[in-house]
Image (cartoon, rainbow, N blue to C red):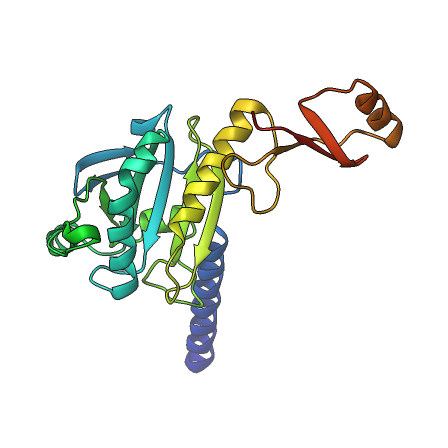
Amino acid sequence: MKIRTTLTAIVTLLFLSSMAQVTQDQNIPMLGEPAPTFTSKTTEGMLNFPQDYLGKWKILFSHPADFTPVCSTEILELAEMQDEFEELNTKLVVLSTDGLNSHLDWIRSLEGIQVADGKKAGINFPLVPDPGLKISGKYGMIHSHMSTTKTVRGVFIIDPENRIAAMFFYPFTTGRNFDEIKRTIIALQESDRKNVLTPANWQPGDDYLIDSPESADVAKKLSEKNKSSIYSKEWYLWYRKNK
């Protein structure tokens, strides 16, 4: 009887553990939802996220670990591009499951590395420690089939109203394309400002798309208006010129 009770308890614990793991994997905020909030010490002081950046665009990056090769190149690239993101009214925040002292040591090391034109990086954005995985859990950054203690390479773009606008996930092995992340920010901002869509492979300066007419008859009427700012390739495929 004791053996049966013990086995039942073990099975129950394993089941609950697996369910908790699945819940953690699925706890990814959806597009349009408010960004999960957190307060934490960082390498730049205390941060109330995302409230401290209300009215600005935000990008929250997660990293597997400090002092690792792919992560190091990504932080250096962010340091190179931080002024470009600042011009786009966008704040950068980096998180990993390492502690604050580790983050500070890593920054000191990275800032000693020569980058473009022999210059050294100045890292002016906060690194957030998350050894307890509380923040990582809120954002669904721990993918258990990869690791139960390290975050995958997550990217969360958050709009000025603190809602999730876009997200990406990369495995440990693959560094992110920060030009694409910047392009996505610009596309989101253009869509907000001008009520337009951006086509495949859109780049700043390219023409936009607009919502499809409800029918071919509506498209014909739109065409008859002969607006010089719009043109079509099919009744459902309309472009707006980027003047």
